[in-house]
Image (cartoon, rainbow over all chains, first blue to last red; front, side, top):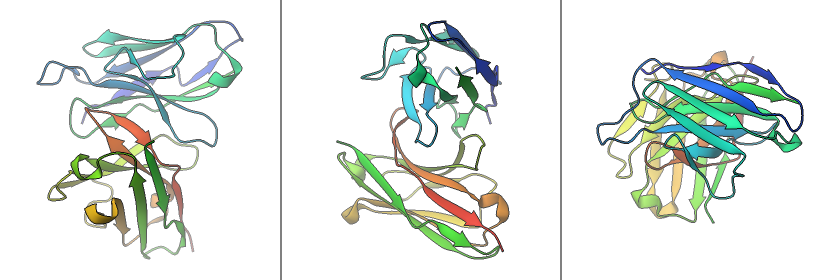
Length: 111
Length: 117
């Protein structure tokens, strides 16, 4: 199984600052079809996860452009510019390139 | 609008059984692979099981293999998870999730399973 390792696990930030979360996979995430299925999810306290980013850098509808994804191969990053109060919660990377799908341990963003 | 609504959670003793349900709407259920994902209290997300759109192929995490059974009813646009021989470590919030292209596009609100004597 592809092991997904996130860092940091805890991310204290100040409103208006930028924040960055790293996600590393134990194996390359290029699918046999050439796509890279690396996703980022945000889970606010008491809520279900919501997808922010898919295929490394594609933002879901309604996701502010403050959120951006980048990376390739085994190293990926979620960047949040101008952190807002509504961004608190847990962020998870997840790979869907290899079976089974696997999640990172989660990064808790605190204001 | 895509909707996934789970039910069936509750408190059960170790060794007991529960059947979770997920009623779906707003998308073509019969051509969509579906998953169960769980989250123990305060912990990370963990994939549990997958059923392909046809219903003929299923996969399970090693931790639940032989104890859990995933199924679906296309006529009811519903997904199920039969959980037997439950253990304390199965205590979690269980989500059904809609699969598309190596991702989960939508999640339900979850149903809580607590295994305790």
